[in-house]
Figure 1 (tube, rainbow, N blue to C red):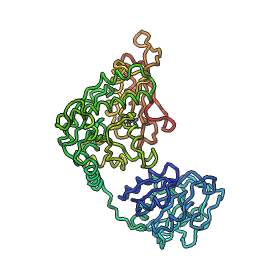
Figure 2 (cartoon, protein in one colour):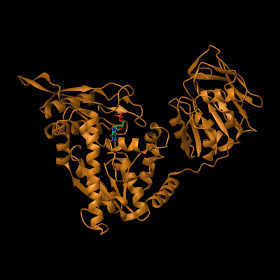
Figure 3 (cartoon, helix red, strand yellow):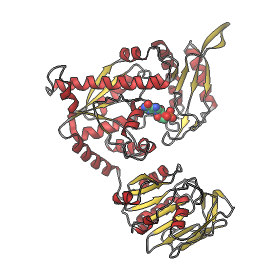
Length: 526
Ligand code: XMP
């Protein structure tokens, strides 16, 4: 792989994605990882990310010079560039001149390897206080800006490169070319990472992991679990059973739609529909605390999967009676659509499975009797969509907006009851229909509708006073749900949604709009 060393800014994921766009496989590692451990991964190249610190700040992450002596091509970006300069014997100074945002270059060496084919007339995105004022010995300065006497350098012999700017962000006009020059020319890596490769590789891994065993996959109706299921199906055929649990927290008509879409799309994977509405609502009765709700829902999911698995094994004659659970446990694999950002968020790979599984179904119980199969662990959302398309899943599934495993259970603020769910379902169906009609489905990442079930407010309808509940519209835009902004939905669309909800759902007399970005808000309210 190409390793992206994370120096603690939010840029590492973006860099990893850009590297993959250059068709090269990338992995993120923390800067605290020892150089030997990085080298043990046999990297084809290493990219040092930006970071929030000054290289002189106390406790600032340092670059071990050994990394530059290992014969592996290295590219430093921003903080990574400065720490590289410092480690190789150059000078980094707090010049007192900050460059922030779109910046013009003053000179650029188009005959360099890193900036080959570029000209000086371009914007580069800068964000730094310190500057490299003298390049290390053996390095050539290949770009300058007014505040950065050394804005880019290279040492072709040792294959070490660096730029002060952030080529990974869209505001750097020709940033992707810088990354590709480094990867394809500097490091000599062929662009060969394709969704076809991903599929082949994952199918092999799944076969190795599951062996002759059987697996079940909880389908949520979302793209991640659908693609995960399709991959596993390709690997082990009908030893996979998909289980869809209707926990009563789904949106209007959703279960029927999923049954229909799935019958048509998975090329014959077995689909078991489980109706567990009563079980979940009983377990949730009286609960208002968000984390408790999530844990209960997660626990009930797993109990339902366990029951379904036991039944499947009984049907296949692998297990004899109800009591023969030891046998069932030994053979149980549970497929999950865990994505790379979740793995990274919880610490860069090692030991991260539990944390994301938690996120996936809202809290796995500790006595989990399944072994997890997570074929999307190395992928970003856009790659999952590409894999889904390549596997022949219909657009309707591939482009489905995310919907959380705990469903509407975490969109009712207060106790979850059947009556409240029905109210929320009606309001949510209207909002979704209007957003779809306005052609906004791909612009908007998702739009939770949240019922403030314990809040009431006074209204007037006809000639009468009403005393109903508010709902909150939470439309957001996002690339990966890690960060998000509130979506600027046109007023006419908002107005139609508001009028229809208050007219058609009698318990609701107020519609409000959530205009909080993430951070500080999360997308869901609970
Ligand atoms: P937050 O609320 O953390 O949500 O900003 C980020 C994204 O994740 C979805 N989400 C979940 N998905 N199980 C899921 O499968 C969960 O427990 C869960 N919680 C949040 C949320 O809809 C958004 O897309």
